[in-house]
Length: 137
Image 1 (tube, rainbow, N blue to C red):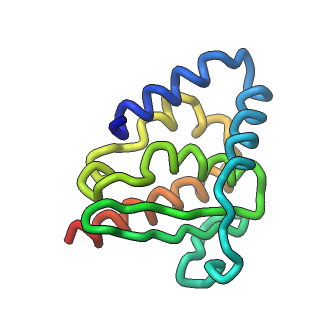
Image 2: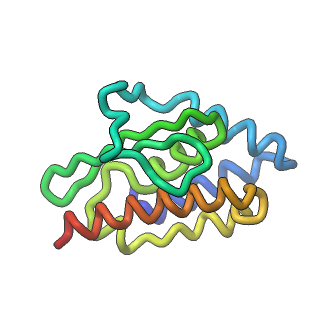
Image 3: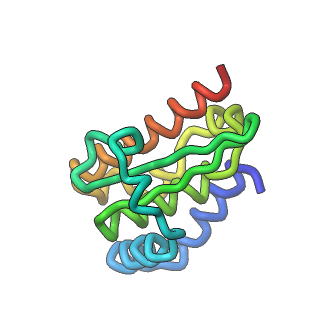
């Protein structure tokens, strides 16, 4: 499934929820399903600055394909990470760079997150896109 299709599928999943409390719970549940993130990967090199919570994203590139391992100490932020992983994990650098996060506006996340959470989400996206740019270069 392409990153664009993954965004569309995500939007369709959120259509099932009538209100934002249910959507928040779904996001939190997605975060609980993230794979384990080893403690020894929680280093300054992988830490995302600009987040209210502690967030780490560890990339691994095999050729042009980039996989990410990520975690946060906050439930809602782990859920946001899970959303980003659905779109950008195990993609080529070119596909990542060609896939703007249009699902954020379509879901209304920018309106429903606190300013600090929104800033953290954008910091995570900036890191993902910077990694993709470095791999592509």
